[in-house]
Image (cartoon, rainbow, N blue to C red; front, side, top):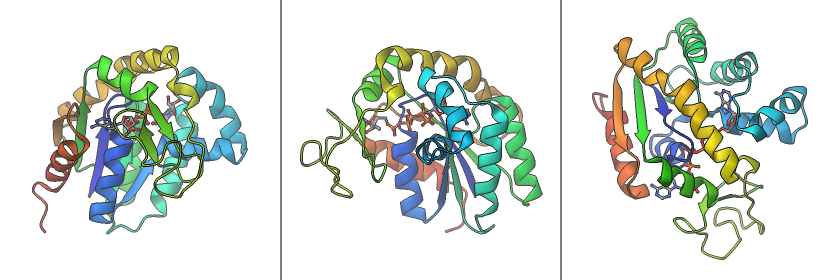
Length: 220
Ligand code: AP5
């Protein structure tokens, strides 16, 4: 199975991707995380990506597609894959279709998470991330048990992502509307199985809807 989690910044793709992958023992390909890891390790790709990411712009396709292909090729054919943050435009969707075809796979589901912009802005500006293990929290909606300490690895000192500042958040939403949202039409026109999911609910309610949609029509 190959599932794409599509949706605007802050809608909960990362949160739901982790829950779905853990429940089904699938792999995640998260381009934002791959790019942030490249930045931390100081690779040339990471250095090139930094300016785009901090400005809330998309990183050039050729850099991202190469990262995705390398990661995808390392995943056994029988293992389910969840894409989070990729594809982000039609050129990336076409590159993905080609890569999958080479591997004898295809996109099986596109799960579109949706929420109003004011909800997205609140989620992003309140998000805090563990710099050590990548766990994601929210100051109001998903606070850690102990203030500023990661529940998962115990690291003290949660950080705010550079691109989660209010002005960058608003630009990321514009980039989503202009470049990524047209993918909904692209996949619908291709008669892919596109499922719209209301992401403006509790994490558990969205989790159940995502899992049901991912598993619909799949033999247990
Ligand atoms: P990326 O890291 O992919 O960011 P994004 O798509 O903007 O998505 P986010 O990670 O911001 O949000 P999310 O939907 O995962 O929400 P989350 O679960 O964290 O991309 C960052 C940058 O990298 C891009 O701007 C671009 O520069 C570059 N990039 C990445 N991929 C690229 C590509 N393919 N091509 C080119 N460039 C690329 O949740 C958000 C917050 O809300 C959290 O605090 C969470 O705790 C909380 N929350 C989640 N669900 C709920 C809920 N149901 N109720 C209440 N709170 C909730």
